Length: 307
Image 1 (tube, rainbow, N blue to C red):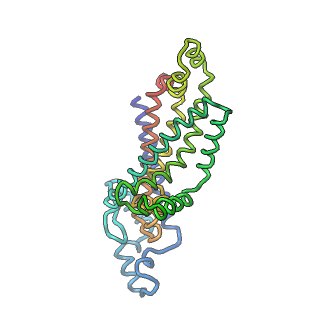
Image 2 (image 1 turned 60 degrees about the vertical axis):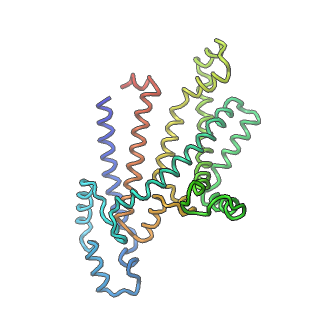
Image 3 (image 1 turned 60 degrees about the horizontal axis):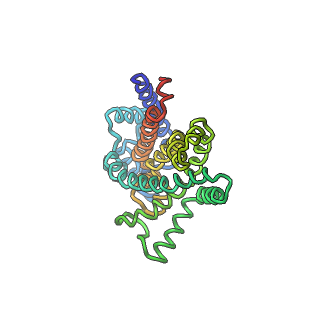
């Protein structure tokens, strides 16, 4: 077990180094100059060079990369080129709203997907199964950038039940969570259905039926209980994506999270902030995948025996 943890941690460090290098190089290779964005096209060449020197952008890329890695080793993500705030402080301000939205959307998705997926598996090939899978296909096909404005139009502008955008209390969370949660629920419901169907033909399910166990108990306790591994994998991947910042949804609803911060930073060529957000996204994925790997050891004794 200890060896497995060390291997995972070593792999995570290598991935983080690769991600940080790739992000740094891509940001410095894409067209656009943060100095021009800050000063505008009418600024003189002398003013541009002065600001570029003040920001440290006049140094060779190799020197900037070296200083960037040294800063990461000290857990220093640098300073925003525009606000001059530490990047760590900016991320700390935005991670809270993103975490709240991610948990709300994923909770909604699980509450919708689990019962629908199990019922679809129980009534396979019947009207309920076809209706459930049809709704899930529709939910997966509707893009967030279309569903979000539609929900704003109906529930905010026409009915006046929720705020249009921003973070103005609990009501502001409803529409972004529904926008994200419905798409996740559609994908998760199909995974639940296929996972439950896969285990319904196993020997222990037939044995439970032969012993006279109630069909509902067989379905929810035995079938669903042993179908959790692929479902857990999908939930972990979805949570990682949400915590990384649901860029489109946060932009549509002006939600002050990591996704909107990433868009703002890309538009202004704020390299340190973009690098910080992407590194946080990568770290979130790695952490959740590692925790999921350890959860497998708890849920499936066969995996524990292999290690």
